[in-house]
Each structure stands twice: as C-alpha cells, then as structure tokens.
Image (cartoon, rainbow, N blue to C red; front, top):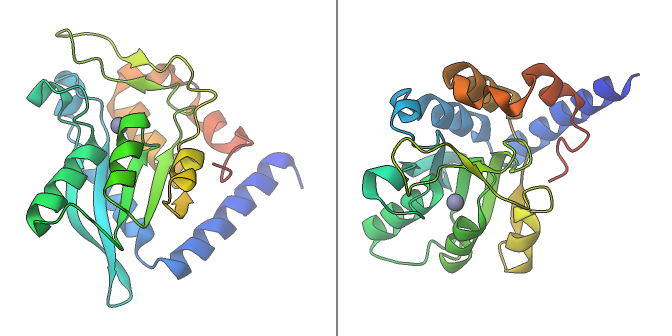
Length: 209
Ligand SMILES: [Zn+2]
C-alpha cells in the first residue's frame, strides 16, 4: 500500500472513530462549510465559519454559529470563532461555556485560542491547519487589502497551545478535502494554496495536528 493510500485509510478510520464518539460531527462541518457566503470573498472577509456545539440527546447540536466579521466591524479580532463564542456567551448570559465545543473550519489563531481558553471550552475541532492555508488571514487595516500571513505559521500549533491551557479535547485536520474544495473553488484568490488534490492526499500531517 502506498503512503497516500495509507494516509487516506488512516483518515477514514479517524473520521469513523470521531463520528462514533461525537455523532453529528460531520454534519456540523457540512453545515459550516455551506454557511460561508460567496460575498465574503468580495467583501474581503476571510471565508471561514465556526460554531459552538454541545452534545444533546446523543448528537452534536449547533447552538450558535459565526462568520468572520473583521471588516464588517472593523475589529481585527472578530474572527468566526471569536464571534461564535461572544454570541453564545451573550445568549447564555454566562461567560463560561463549560462543557461546550468549538467547531471551526480553520485552526484557531492565537487570539481565538485565547478566547477558547477563557471561555472554558471543553474541546475544539478544526478543519484546515494554519499550514494548509499558509497562515493566511484577512488584514483589516486597508480596504481591498490582500490576505496577510502569519509569519511563523509553519511552527504554529494551536492544538498544543489549547492542550497546554486546559482545553483537553482537540482534533484537527478534519474534513480538509471538503473545506479545501469549497475554498479553492469558491474563492479563486485562495487558489495559490496549491494543488488541492495533492494537498488532500499527500500531506503527511493529515490527522496529526
Ligand atoms: Zn482567530
């Protein structure tokens, strides 16, 4: 069996395992990917989505979702994860989201990792890694600005930071194929992320982070 086939098989097994522990996880990702509007590309919001979920009657249920609102609000940290956390806390009238999970299409940045820790979230599930998107995030300072990148995205590890600060359950690299397809086909500006099929199949880090 080739390395590519091995990686693919490992990924499928991991999805099955996670889906049996967290039923509905795939559905949540499908809903998140579908919720990102094409207008986000035009408005220069980085196209991503996040949700606060909880296990209800044996299945993950979305309580609150969020999209990037960096340019809409003119607020550098108004990332999808931060927006979802803020909304859920406001709805619950409780800044502690104990027992809840964050699901997000991209590995949370340093700021959103901080928000997840401060909210006392139980776990985080993310799709693409910062490495996958080459550390891209929107630069809100200028109109029509290009996407900026984290300078050290290769060394960035959100999972490690979350785990080290009490967020026990962190699974990354989930449903990368689905998310990459949406991003590269709906937002051609992100096409320089590279060959999508190669990214999906040949990344040795699939399932690691
Ligand atoms: Zn962020």
